[in-house]
Image 1 (cartoon, rainbow, N blue to C red):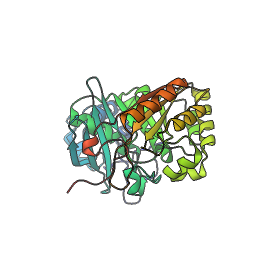
Image 2: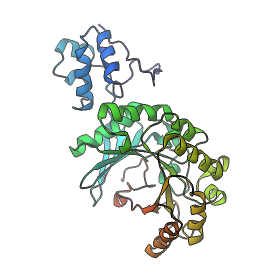
Image 3: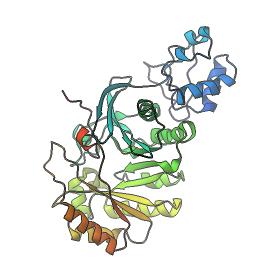
Image 4: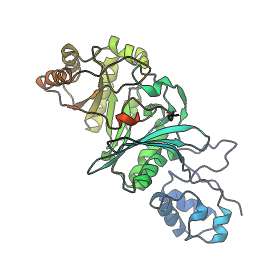
Length: 356
């Protein structure tokens, strides 16, 4: 008896080479429907769901509550798990993973532990097409979008490796999430409903793609939206972010205001501080003028160095001066010093290369 393909409302297209899509990412209802298609009782769907999301099974043949005969029948049905190609631990406990996908591509994931939480920084694409000038990922180019199971797998991999429940997920790894909206939204649903992570513990980051923030608002998610601004005006933003040429900062901010009005959710603005480039008090004042009148918060990120460019991190005094200007203008602001710097796992440092 051959296994019937799992139908997925999000990703129903299957390549000619792969007749069965992975089970990871499917809901308990989808899994139940699938096991029934195989002639199994409905309760097997709940068991399969538990083994995939709670036990982290990598092969259906290893599910001991199923009969050996049926396990042998469905042994070739892919669960959708990656393998750890490389693992690096920073002194602060942050762990960077290079994960090898089923087609051999490599994607990067970061586990960030603190005393009370475990955060995973997930990638949504292999590489990134945005080519931001200060970011290592963009220097490597773009290959493809990740499927929903490849995004969810990153969280399960970190959870297994740390032997600790993941409490927070940030979509801030390789890639631009809003250029892979269907798979990202499917992964958000799965992480929330199947893995059990609250939506308010999920952060979705974007550099800003025209009309995509407005479309995201229509889903009324409780996730945190983080918009990578990095400059207080159009001219400077275009120098740092090539895609900004086709999307004016005023249009982006208008879409952000619309998002807040529709969802009632505050937006976080990510702003990487580059010494002598965008970190002057006048830059802070100009930025504050854009952000008045709607709910937002500014996350200042002192630059994390990469080899390809000569940007520098501002001094502590320069960072504090920027903060002071924003506070004087009644803009909510915090400084986020990235974890994992020594392992090239900090913000802007991700790349699909392992040290020789």
